[in-house]
Length: 311
Ligand code: ZN
Image (cartoon, rainbow, N blue to C red; front, top):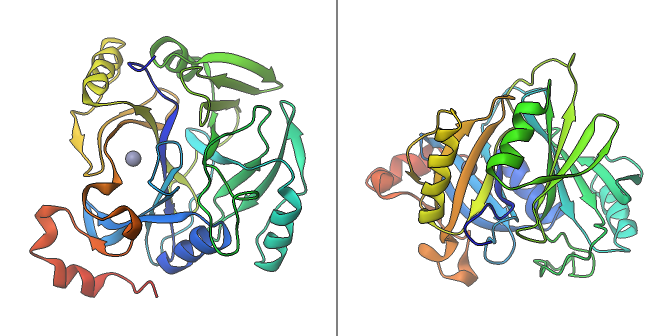
């Protein structure tokens, strides 16, 4: 199964104020700051990575925070909901925490036999805590306030909202190896059995819904995980062979990537496990320095001067 898609690798979204984003994800939600770097295409803005202890694929959420960014609006052609897996019995803890930190949330509900709570980040990005039917054995990152018995364990899955699901579903099933698990109304749940976590993609079909508009509080793309560059390039041939335009291999410092826009409008990426987040910092210091790719190192002083302060 190793030469296939291994669930989600990471999800990337857009934020407003970097400091607010950092506080919410590391303090309120208790994720680890994995990496503080810059947008490789726009080095005057941060690229912040959050996840578990070592930034395991399937736990990595990244943001491009733009000070003064206009808010986007969720809609079709977008990932519209990121679901985190949490342990059984943790909801009381999370509801108390959301009350304490004025997080907007809904009371627990249930879909496909799994209990969940929907909540919003400071920019209105929609997130969810889910108690999965099948126990999640991943080791959670702990903080002083959020211990392993309640902490998030990484992604459960992601929801894509689409005008029509067929063409997107075909990529999931025919190229990526997912299968339709369940359907409820206009929600179709796809799963890959190549891995037992971060393996769910829900497609929600809304033919009359407006297209999503990118901006703070919306998702930018979702990345699927492969083991290494050899598998990555096998998928490049498969995606191109099915008639979709796909980029060349891009070096993202912590992984290698390909991007293509699936026919439903969502930007898909395929990303490798290698080389990982230990490449430029010791594991116990992840996220502590501002890391620049080699092409920007000579301009470090100017870049640091324009980036917003995070502490
Ligand atoms: Zn990405």
